[in-house]
Image 1 (tube, rainbow, N blue to C red):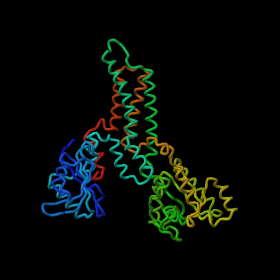
Image 2: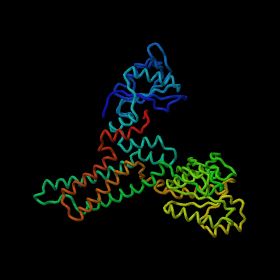
Image 3: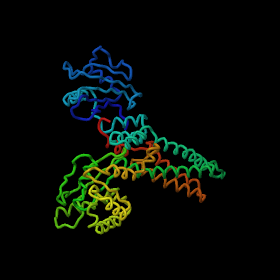
Image 4: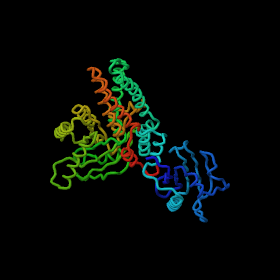
Length: 462
């Protein structure tokens, strides 16, 4: 897996821009850079100090391609742990391609997805969970996902796992030592302390596993289905939330035939709002398909916003309650926000009557944007942001979650063995499996297939 050849890739997004950065990493990276660079002060790149900048030109034989800045990072004090240079050139796509093709002719090869970060991992600059956090940081699109990725990049998660693994490893060594003296029937591992350690590890693992529910929605956004009868203002509400005309608004019932989705960040948390087709009895084939999709979207959402026309409550209140009960019974575990729209048309008496009938109702006017902030606050209350505020470790990676579940299962087996006086050799097998799962998270246990799967999801220049 470890390769010493020099790799090159564009480190900035593809396409034209003010500048572009081309990254080279490998044993010969600085020498290759020197072969195409002409310093304005006649400097030899190979003789320059690490972490320095140099102005000059990239030259292909007698042809000058661009005026550039070259940054030098000498291994092991670089991102990858190898000699690295970064060429900051003008952002023309033609210039980018000309420089990369020149570097390929000089001995570089194109980097694979995530290969710079893979080399950083292989060279001990990052552990595996930190390396995976790099991809999460790049893709973070709100404050919460950015905060979690930064915490993991700083090693918060891996440090917690590494500490547990080290303590368990110490006891595993004592258990193994007992096996060497099996005939003497001696105990080197204090069973009381061992039981306390297992309880502590079990507690931490359960906390980390529970945090995945929060981490997953923060990372991927919380899907919120906006449902209700036709023409009650669902599309108007979506437009009010997004503060733009995203959905078609019409007086004609059944305008929304398909679902419309868009994202909004509230309090640092990403929400994915889904404007669905109105629920009603219809003979329109296309509209019927839209209504079927509505129930599919409710199934896949985590929060349901049920919207109705509060100005029609006196006439359709009974029918409304039947619809609400249907959704509550069909999706009992989903948080349900009941919203009465068009509240600007109500009298004080009508408002009191509706609140008496449906105490948990939130009255708004999507058209006038009244009460929309209250809705945002209510949605935010469904997310457990306490752990986020306290900077606790939050698991967002499905691979980590799977390893934590397996590690917890093994720890519980060891606990059961300890409580039933299971022989040391059998307990040692379960301890080894738990250690293996811990190592899978931090990268102390890896294989080429695992690394290939992880880094294949990275962008090329990272």
